[in-house]
Every structure is written in structure tokens, then in C-alpha cells.
Image 1 (spheres, rainbow, N blue to C red):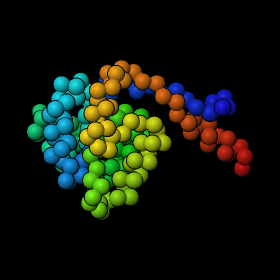
Image 2 (cartoon, one colour):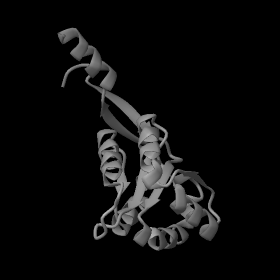
Image 3 (cartoon, rainbow, N blue to C red):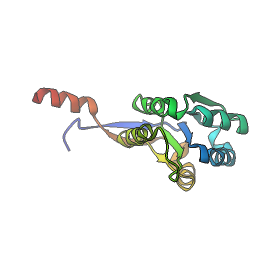
Image 4 (cartoon, rainbow, N blue to C red):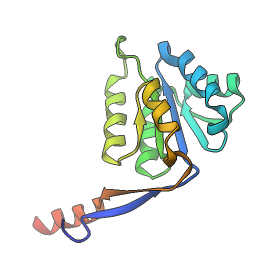
Length: 157
């Protein structure tokens, strides 16, 4: 490993959590949030359009809403991950239903992976994450030092 190749990045104890659910999974998301309300109320919540509104209305949890997924909401969440403003994604996706905005969904999943953000794509994984001891503690992760990477590429040109 070369010096400056990685940077340490800390997820805070109080997480910013993005909530996303495809149409056939929105009820599951609301049920999951209700079941985990006592934990979620200690974190900052945001989500895509209808999911954010449903979770907020049905659970009483404050959820900052972005656009619906097909209208750019997935991309808004991805941009906030890049800006280090989202620490965790709970995304109840529907693998049995074609999505008109599938490229946006794939881009979101990719950016979460690039920035080493925990992401749950189903209820079981969400349960494991939310009950983890890291949920209410700081967590240090190593990310590729993208700035250093760009500097090195520029030097080579």
C-alpha cells in the first residue's frame, strides 16, 4: 500500500440513513421502520419521494424527502453519499419487478460500494445492520484517496 493511497473516514455514532423502497416493498419499509422506531429516532433520516412521505406519515419519524426514484431521487441520494452526508442506505428493492429507472438504481448501488457505505437490499440485511454494535457507535473505514489518485493520474499524463 502506497502512502496517501487511502484516507480514513469515520461514520459518526448518529447516522444519516437513506430509506428507499420500490413500490411493492414500501409497506415492508414502513413496517420495518415502525418495528425499529426506537433505534431510528436517534438518527437522521432521509429518503426518496413516496417512501419518505409514507414512513414519516405512518411512523411519525421525521424523514427528509428527496425526489421519487424515477425523477432523480436515487441520484440525489448518491450525490449525498459522495458528499459524505449519508452514512447508511436501507433500500428494499424488488428483484421480481422491472424498474424504469434501473440504471439510476445500479448507479446508487455502485456509488455506495465505491464509498464503502453499508447498504441493505432486503429486510434481513437491514435487521443485521440495525442491530449491529456499530449502529450507535463511530465506525472507521478506509477509502481510496480519490484526490491523490487524480493527482497521480495527472502527473502521468
